[in-house]
Amino acid sequence: QAMAIVRNVEALSDSADILWRMSLHVFNDGEIADACLGSQRETGLDISLLFWLCWTGMELWHEVSIRDLRQILQSIYAWRKDVVEVLRGLRIRMRTPINPVHVHRQEHLRAKLRKLEICAERIEQEMLMRFSSDFTRNSGKSCAYINMRRYINVLQCRPGEEDMEQVLKLIVVRAEDWSFMEHRGRSTAQDIA
Image 1 (cartoon, rainbow, N blue to C red):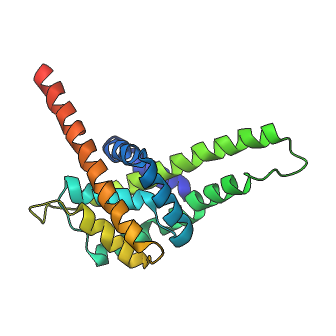
Image 2: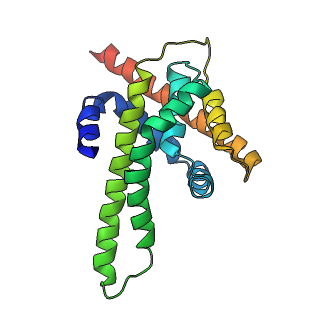
């Protein structure tokens, strides 16, 4: 079943590259990365979904409804639980030496698990981009913050909620910065051509 999912999303790789580039740009901010990883551990926050919701609201001006959000969460649940979280769990478990495996061999395997985990997260983003193709602009402004806040509410995040509000605002700023550079880069390339 996992291979069928992989084949279905391969066609979406190009469009998902845009989301992946934005995610890397946003996640490169240490404060955002630390807060997101902390929420991932504490509340089960799906960082890929959070960034997709930001991108959808910012680039498509689409406000994702709670009904759509719940359907999306259900659609990606198996991949998230059975692949992404399993790989992450193994990688985290291997932080502690497991005897009698030599530490260097274990670290080598742990690095490979990290690469697989990142690959699985990227596939999840490709799956998410499938939903974007059904969206139309239903707002005259960015809905990035609204979409992310709605997801946080669905998760019922309470630990560090004030801090999370600040992080969501930082994510929007970093994503808008990326969007400006991305669109400026496209315009410059088109001007040259």
